[in-house]
Image (cartoon, rainbow, N blue to C red):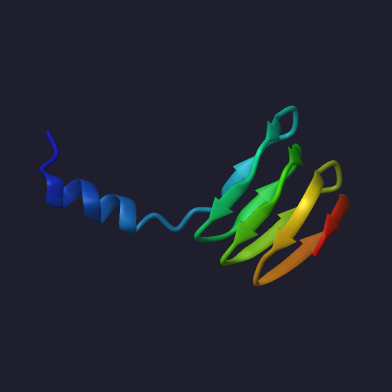
Length: 79
């Protein structure tokens, strides 16, 4: 159905924002090459090359390292 070239191109052209939705809890570190929105809970470190948006109910407990951030929720972290 897809050859290797088509699959690789489709993945590299993906420009969406990663999301941790409300009702989701992640325990562990997250590394993101782009932007990410947190509406759930992240118990761990987050490294993002792009923008981090923490929604009103979003929580990060750990270190946050990113290009820039828009924080409406709770950050219990070293930023």
